[in-house]
Image 1 (cartoon, rainbow, N blue to C red):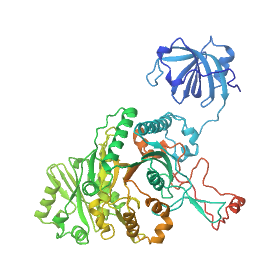
Image 2: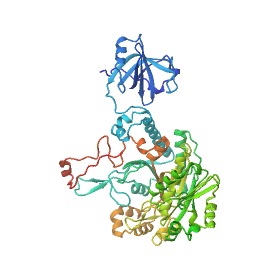
Image 3: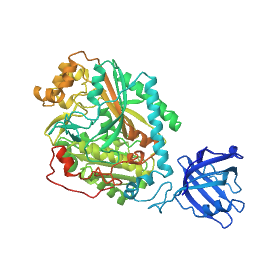
Image 4: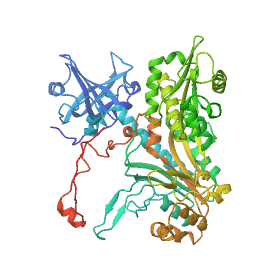
Length: 599
């Protein structure tokens, strides 16, 4: 095996072009493939910038030619040679006009046959790819996505630095203040029986930084939440975390729009139009059934509760009389794309969102077929069609339930599913939206009480201040989310800066004065020394990079992600530790379970 003694790499494989012909270059990388044609050998050499063809022929030094004949996929090599124009050019790679005629070849490492081919858009099983993540990351599309993440992070730091933000690190070992997702706990050896928590976000620290006089803070912050995973969630994730003093919502939104405009232009060459559209939470739910609506298509919700509240169809009337609603979407002009079998599958789809079923009317070639028409009067049927703006070629889909949240969830997801099936979602069409005026509280069936929709430090709307303790259902927050194409990129709020309001918020959440002081005493005490008005926002860096890279999951833009049960197949963590480590931490394990990893 050779080494790199007295060898110096001069170029990366993917950066050479026809203008470099005549230059002697030295390259390093992995063998993509070798083609031995007898008196002629071609080797495709790969590094993180791309591929280039190495060539060997009968005029090559025999020892080098023999070494080239032994090369196999994923061998690591270094080569020196002359850049020259290729006889047989290709447009499949950026370096397709040239090749390197090799005069020196070093074999640095051999490789076993990998468990899957190192190529773009691998069809390998996800679990296999994650088990051999170091091989998966060699694939060109994965390397591009990780490089995109690097660029987003660099632009972020540059932009916020230019706008007066200081990057300040906050602790990773913090106090557990349970209110929201479960904490990851870290036992203390020095303080037996006591635990640190890994931060779910730097929320309290960044507010304390505002009290400390740092009026513009940012951090690329690692965060941890012990919650069930989905395609766009991980137990450890990264936030672009921001906080500003002496500002209102408009100030915060303006600076964020500038950041997004810049990052999309520099990375994707997309000119984002600002200012972004703003929409109150209530309007977003009524029109789209979601607080993160995709605005690239229509199919908006229409409320028909007033039309069907006394109709003869119990599914409709019962939903309204039970305190819920009946709403529809009109899949305009696409009735022909949804025959009865596909409509039935849509009915099964909404059941996954707890809807009991799907009612429908299909208008095609002058004929009207319906699942509910016969139960309603002619006037009621006509009123529904008028409310829907229906015409020939349309498909009306209706969901009713005694809980509005079920109707919204089902129809909000259904409109997106229908758009996906119709293939009308343009990934290059970027529709940004600020969703504002979120509810201050949401009712938790599990806990039997109202909990903070965002966190306990979010300020109420000024006109709803008196509702904080008396009318939680209708109390709105100075909270806002930035949404892109149906994905929440980030969220934030104006914070409570008045101690009396913060105390009222704690009472509204059911905390006694003692509870509040035990959990948040450090913040409560700090507020006594003069808190500036402040607010902020945190982006999900993983989600932002996922959308910009065109990835299907945030796992594709995270170098070493976890799978659905929060394990990592490559290192097989979490894993058991030895008894001495447990003894040092004054811990004992009373039950041990080990689940197989899931994709």
